[in-house]
Image (cartoon, rainbow over all chains, first blue to last red; front, side, top):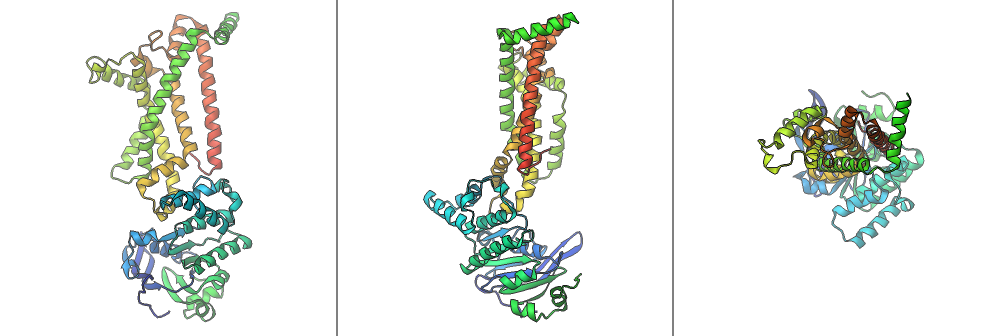
Length: 244
Length: 237
């Protein structure tokens, strides 16, 4: 396991995180610090606790013990307002594509002209320019997920969490999402993304958090974790073996 | 058989000829029920939505109570409203008994639980889907209510139509508090009951046909909107 990092300014951290339901431990993470410049990918088998960890980091689930920190401070509403999350199944409002984006832009109290310009930028960024008036519910899976990412980006987050955003998508749609993620990362948005896909981790990750059974079994630079994993669980997962 | 056919043709003649008495009764029925449904919507929708998103002790009890009120016998509602509005009742001073307002009050009492319960079901289902996403976007529980109501609009119109269906077809409560007074509180259902007992089947049949027409139209609208709501991914109970 990578040496534990001290909290850096702006760094997202976890201290003594413990979450259990009905007497069963779901997450036990003594310490974790996500402060690298590039995308962090959380990798691991089903039930490893990846999505739960993401929800704890975003403040959607309060742990039973321990805390999530941002820049050394306990995660608070101000921090949460600078985060956004995209879910495995995109949750789109039953409105048009433009109205889904406008919902977020209006909440930022932007002047109408700025809102309009920002909307055009976002639609172009997601390749949805011609679909602004279309019902969001009629989009294809890939388009719906792109809209969900655009809506999250409309918040101008410092951190963007993505929970297996491409798990149900074909290679073309996956590639489009990955390009959006990389562009957001290049603009300085901290990306924390859950995936099962080792190839995707290789394409996107700067660092990888490997999880199994509610524990972080390894955290390190992507190349090191993927090419020379330290933990037996990581080696088995990457080799395609069964990990329980 | 011949008499039956002749009553039908007389009924049809009343409708086609635009019999003023018949259409006055239809108009009053529609006015009373539309007002009642609008008032019920103003009360029932926020209550239903609040019950869907709020978490507080006794919430389940309130939901059970509200669902039970949906099946409250109309004559009992009529009796209770009658007691409230009668001269010796707490609201007797308002002198509303045997007026269309009293009938609206009775229908509001009957329809509000239906609209509130259906709203609660629809909004709760949508809230389940939206909850994490709205929280992630920084929308508070309270602020999520108008978002959910708007996004559930198709299913909520269905709830309104269901309430209207109940109101327009109601007879027990309105006859008690309205008194079935000619040209004042006589609506379709109460007139049908009265005219049938008097043997004036033509007017009763004409009103019955109009009532069935309204019921079919309302159900057609409910079906169309339900289908659209399902297509939008929202199934309502």
